Amino acid sequence: MFETMSKMFGIEIEVLKDYMPHELIALFEGKILDAEIVQQRGAHAIVYGTSVGIDVVTGADVEPFRKKYLVHQDISVGGT
Image (tube, rainbow, N blue to C red; front, side):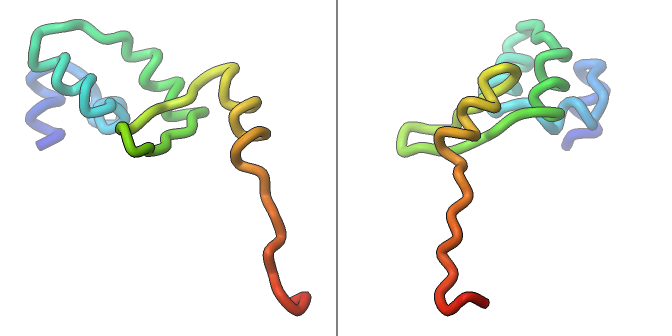
């Protein structure tokens, strides 16, 4: 599937696989997307799901998000 889409849209498979579902739909609707944003997302991003859908945090927003929501907590019992 990605190979066919890659040929259709002239986008490398490695970039295409990082597109969000709504971005793939936009491609089929003839919209042009900024591939650089997609590449940056793949390099440094957080993708998470909520009860409403999927969201992505990229760029300068990643570190504050990580510090606020992805704090490591040692929950081991008995000191393994």
